[in-house]
Image (cartoon, rainbow over all chains, first blue to last red; front, side, top):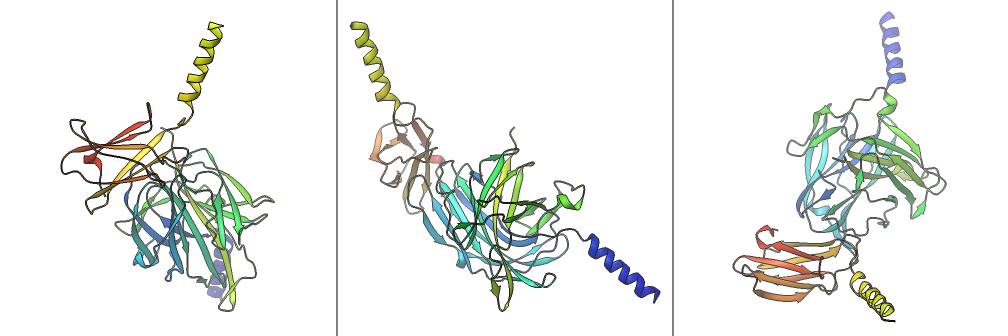
Length: 270
Length: 105
């Protein structure tokens, strides 16, 4: 009996103190602003970002493509789904099914878009589907980075996501079916453990330490126009996830949180 | 009268030289792996480089191939057998030279 009470107490304490865990769909490549074109690596990993924690098994994505745009040229869509290779990604606590590929990037903007297979989150009792975007640039000539791609849930950047100095703000607009989502809830996390592409794992060393769990996962809300603003405190990759943009959406008869994720990379002024 | 004319000529000069490219020119070239090279030109504000003069020069600066950036601000040429330089020439102060040695896939 005593033991049961202890176990129950322990469970209750664990439940109460469990830190806010945010799922983040990564499209990772080391650099957002490349000086020269060439082959770049890409890794698709679904993880708990800040702590490089539990990494979820990804199914075969529904879509993975890039939109290349340079100067005044018309944007071109290139399908990359069949270029993906399955890998196993190792986090600090487990390993999960992920994907990788390489891509030949020439000048201009390259907007990578992922529509993943919904993930069943047993702990929450619903599916999660994070439509994800990352925009990189080669050579400094801009393209259509500010244009919506047209995926169902999307964060459109209002500032170049690859030209942010540390300390700049980042502004984005949350869209569902092309329309702004007033008051959208946005979770923000820092890529605190460097992804090591050769090892297909996160580095054990953390770049920053959170003084308290609230700092692991920051939460902000979009304004009445679906626009949010975030001051960037540190160099590196930051993920923004606008949650549950289509509350009635279901998958296989269960609730599915239809999220929109975007990544930015800030650089220190030196 | 003469003074006025000189001032007018001065301003006319400003208009003709100052307009087109008040931004950084950009040009990157890539080896297509099939014996050709493609150069992509543009400007840092995203404006087009269509029509900009392109030259492929030998080491002694002799012009081997000459042409213009196409409507997509691209220029493709047959890779010369020996050392060369590509010149993107959008006018004085807006000229970029790319050494053939640095052009890779």
